[in-house]
Image (cartoon, rainbow, N blue to C red):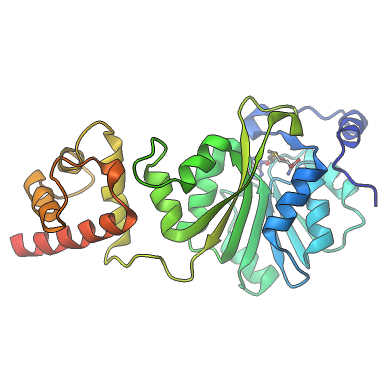
Length: 292
Ligand code: SAM
């Protein structure tokens, strides 16, 4: 079948259906075969794979996915795109188009029904306005996924993969790196899309860990401590956590725990590693028991 990935086919499809791009849905369609091939290589798809694609648009990437994977579940929110997808992808019997909002869909049930609950590979050119809720939702709700290979805003990719000391390091870096190993696949300039986005883009692959790289007794508390530490960027960690309504620890308890870790009490959140946040969480839990 003719490839959908050329700018001309996209322009013809817009004209044929009188399609209007919806900014509110983050619609910037990929029209670059070279980038699509890079995404396919990074996703390492085979016949045995079931892919979850979020936001198929006109079906450009879906076509590539359908040719590599055994099955593709393509979730699209825009009603106007459903009949277009039924047309552009009519030759692919292994594609299931699902009309819905990915943030509201019961993905566990979908994967249970369509892939017997086995992990799927997520591959998508994501709508940028909901990148973080989509990715964190997949991790925190324990949706069975093995890899997530996605186009995101460059700045968000930088935040996901960076470590302590960088200006981009924050709660998103720690959350992503607790669940997965990030790898930057490619930088993608605005001219690879119609319409062109105002920001740079990046393809990132997140390979989910079977077991998290650190062990911590209370994961939810660790993430509350992380959020408290980064909420007040210019404050010390002791003040950030001590002033937070989200966590029950005093500044003295935090200073004491840091000193046990041989970390200065004037340290800022952005210098701590994931391992150190895990250790701090466990030490604070013990100190709370001692105070009880
Ligand atoms: N995959 C297409 C491509 O690469 O050309 C389109 C990518 S475009 C960046 C994002 C797509 O996500 C659009 O088709 C948009 O309508 C869809 N979308 C936006 N919000 C969504 C949501 N909440 N659930 C499912 N799809 C959504």
